[in-house]
Length: 275
Image (cartoon, rainbow, N blue to C red; front, top):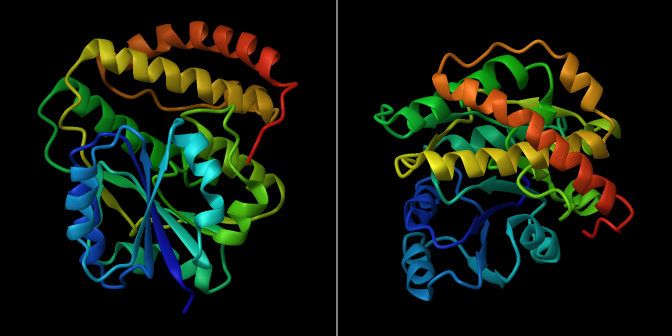
C-alpha cells in the first residue's frame, strides 16, 4: 500500500473542522494531512481542526498568496506517494479515500477523481444551481474527459504533481490546466463515481457574490483553454444546458469573460509559469 497524504487548502472557513473530522473517520486514514492555510486564517480555527483528527499527523503551512500560488509553493512539503485533495467545504464519507486511491495503487491511473453531492437538499436558488451544475459536469463532461475533474476531490501520484506543478497564472481553474497537461503527456486519469464527497454550499446566498465568483472562474477557465490550445475544442462541444435561470445569466457573462481572458493571457503568456 502506498503512503497517502491529504492536502486541504483553507482561508477563513469555519467548515474546516468538519472536513478534517471526516478524515479521522476514514476506513483508510491518511498517513499525513497537510493544511495549506492563508496567513489570515485564525489560529483558533486551525487548532480546532487539528483537534478533530487526533490520530493523523498534521503539518500546517501558511502562505500569503491565493490557493493556486499556495499549492505551487508547498509542493516540496508533500511526503506521501499519493496526494489527495479535499476542500475545506467538503465532508468525505468513510470509504472515500480507500476507493479514490485504489486505481492509482493498482497502476491503472496517474490521477483519479470523484463527484460531489449537496450536503443537504438545496434550499436556495444558488444552491440548486450549483447542485445541477456539478451533476451536469460529472454526468456529461467528466466521463469523456478527465480534464474536467474538479481538483478538490482528486488523488494524484505525488511525483506527477511535482513533475507538472501548478501554474499561478491560472487562478481558480488550476485543475483544468493541470489535468489537461497531464493528459497531453499520456498520463491516465480515471473517474471513480463511488468516491464521492459532500459539498457544502449552504452559505451561498448572495447573487452578487455568485456572479463575481462565476465570472472569475470563467475568465480563469478561458485562460487555461488558451494556454493549452483547447479553446476551439471547447467551443465545439455540445453540452446539455443546466435547467436553471442562473445558467442563462452565466451564458451572458461568458463572452465578457472570454474577452478579459484574451487580454490577460496575452499579457501573461510571456511570463514564467512558476511551480
